Image (cartoon, rainbow, N blue to C red; front, side):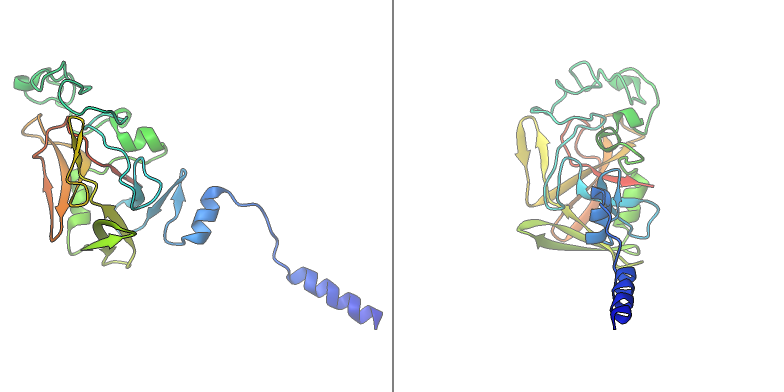
Length: 233
């Protein structure tokens, strides 16, 4: 009888799971199997050419607006206009980088942000970066994803669901910053790409949306403060 009890105990011990400590990234992966973490930040695989972060840069949840960045700047600030813009000398026609026309400043013919000027890469590291216009277009393409205007935890925005695997991300309607003011929060979302408008150095491309419509545009100048949603390879 004692031998039988001992055998039972040994079998039970062999069947017990081995408990080890988990990193924060591993815990996130266990709790959210479709939100794998990379370099401390979660992403979703939508079956596209890049993986999309679950939160805006500067946010800690999908519904938070996060930080606002002028195009080519990597830190938020209190005033967004040409007088404070990093890559000009106080006016839109005195640009010092990312310029393709002497009408706007010193020509260098750079049309894609370098990683040192990429808000996603500088703040999150690793291979995180801002999406190109082509990658934003891929996300906007209704053959690839369904965009549904919704309210998530009290915040308006779009749920973007992949037609390829059913995974989704949420993009809050975080508005934009002009000078020291925040406009259109809760109604519109504006998200920078890393791509300069190749025909006009005043502008860079971005996705913007409102209930019922999703577009690409370059209406706002580079000095405006827009949201950034990062991608990784």
